[in-house]
Amino acid sequence: MSAAPWCDGRDGMYGWIWRHLPGNAWVKALLSLVLAVAVVYVLFQYVFPWAEPLLPFNDVTVDNQ
Image 1 (cartoon, rainbow, N blue to C red):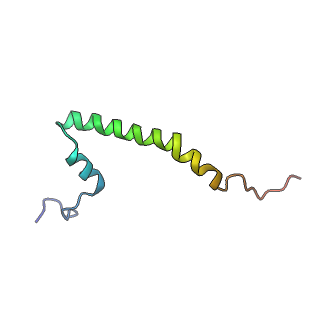
Image 2 (cartoon, one colour):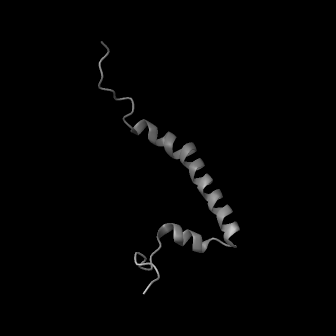
């Protein structure tokens, strides 16, 4: 039986990433921050500009009166 009643042995994606990063807790925290910044950079530089024409932000339904 686990120490926490809600823990069933699966800690999800973030636990998997944390376990597989090298180093102690400070190195893992720094690498996690670098990974998060890299993901945000890739999203803003490549993914969002690619997806922007596909999104209906310019389809307004309010008439000018």
